[in-house]
Image 1: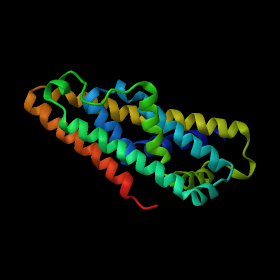
Image 2 (image 1 turned 90 degrees about the vertical axis):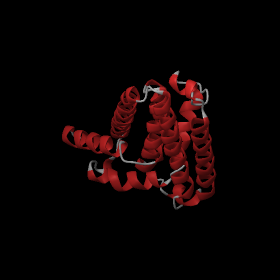
Image 3 (image 1 turned 135 degrees about the horizontal axis):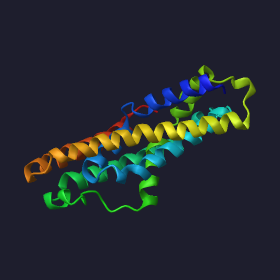
Length: 206
């Protein structure tokens, strides 16, 4: 991969990372309630899942997306159910919990990472996206391990920058929701966003 191709690939990934979807909505809702820092492992889980799809695409394994449809359906429903659960908890959380940042269910790093991984892994069409996407920037007939490693690193950095920028922007908006009434509205809005992400995940086409 040339320097020019690498820069163009990185820019495209950065744009892709902020494209509205269940992952972006999940980061947005979490950052509004718990701040940007709480979104790091959630975003990392999504990025790692995408990188796995990228690597599979590099090896031409699109057949997985076609033959393992049942597995991806289960993953999608699990991810959707969890987003609904989180959205409900945010919606029903007391104002005092919102103000001190505990509206979301308690999550460790591993649980947050797994949530993000499930959100991205539930969409096997990502592998098809990368298969169509990669030839624009790379000569897929002469892939090397180095090319795959560079593409994976650029994808990780680009996705994390994009998702954490969204988280940071949403977190800054929290300063406008200091009163109990405003925090109540924020709970409802954030909960609705999270449940909307779950709906998108559950209802999107196979």
